[in-house]
Figure: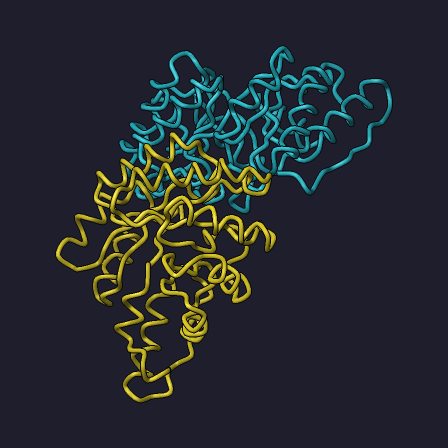
Length: 239
Length: 239
C-alpha cells in the first residue's frame, strides 16, 4: 500500500452497499453494525431501510445514503423527486440516483439532464451522485451522460448499480474522470472487491468507492498499514 | 394446441413486457407497434414510458400497464403510492407492483400487507398485480406472500420480474394457485418463452402471461390453429 494512504483514509472513502432486494432485517443489521465497527464513511441502504439505518447508526459517525430510481433508472422524474423527498425526510444525507438509461441511449439528453436536475433541486444541500450504469453504454454515451450530470449540478458521477452484470472498469473510470471538471467527483461501484483494485482506481482520481466487500478490503488495508504484506484478499460474493 | 384455445384467446392473456432499462425509444416503439399488430391484451412498460405508450397505442385496443417499485420492491410505501398515482395520471390501467421482498423474508408480514394495501387503495378500480419474485423465496414465503396480497385486495399474484435470474416455474405456480382463493388470478412471468410452456401453465389455472417472446408464441399459436403442427419455437433472448 502506498505509504501516503492509511486504512482510515480508505474507510473514509467507502459507501458500504446494503442493497440486495432479498436481504433480511437481520442481515441488514449485521452490515450496519460492521459499518459502525470499521468507521466507514457511509452505508448505502435500500430506500425502505433508511429510517431504520439512521436510528441504528445514531452516534456512530457513519452517514446514511440511499438510492433513487434504483436500479433501472426508468421511473418518472416526479417519482424520483418524491422518492428523494421521502429519503431526506427519513434521514438520508446522500442520494445515489440512476439516470434514465433508455433516454440517454436514445439521445434524449435534455430529458436526462432535467431528470437529474429535479433530484438535485429536491436534495438541496445534500450530495447527489448520478449512476450511469456504464455496462449498457458506449463511450460516447458515458461521456454525454457525465456532462449532463455536471450541467444538472450533480456532486458525483458513479459507474454502476451492481445489478447489470458489469461494474466499474478502469477504462470507464478514466473516461468519466476526463469527462467532468474537478468540481465533480467520481465514484466506482460494482466490482470493487479487493484493496488493490480500489487503490488502482484511487490513482485514477476516483474519490469514493461503493462496495459490499468492505470488511475484506479494510482488513487487508490494516494488515498492510501495520507493516505486513497484507492479505490481497478478494470477496467475490460481494458487489 | 387444445382445440378449445384459440390464438386470439392467448393474445388476450398476454402482457407484453417492455421493461429492460437500456431499451431506446425506437426499440420501445417497435414493441408497441408489434403489440397493436397482434392485438394482445396489454403492454407492460417502464414507468417513464407510460404517457408515450398510451399516446402511441390510442385506438389500438391494447391496454397499457406499468410496474411499481420495480424490480427490487424495496422502495418505501410512500414512494410506491406516489409512483402509482403518477402512472394512473399518465394513463396506465394495470399496475404490477413488487412486494417488499426483504420484509417478506424477515417475516414482517404486516408491513408487506400494508405496503400492498396502500397501492391497491391508490389504484382505486384499476388492477393491481403483486410480484413475489419467487426466485428469492422459500415455499412458505411464497404462500405467505400470496395470502398477504389477497388480504390486501390485489387482483393478481405474479411470479417474477424477469430480472432476478429465475422466472416462473410450474412448481411455484401450483403453490401460488393453491395459496389464494378463486377471486385472485395468477400471472406467470419470467421464462414464458414458448407456446407449450404457456399452455402448460394455463392448464394449472394461470390466466395471464408476462413475456417478451410474444411474437414467437403467437406465430406458433396461429400456425397450430390453422391446422399445422406449429413451430414449437422458443425465444431465449426474451424474458
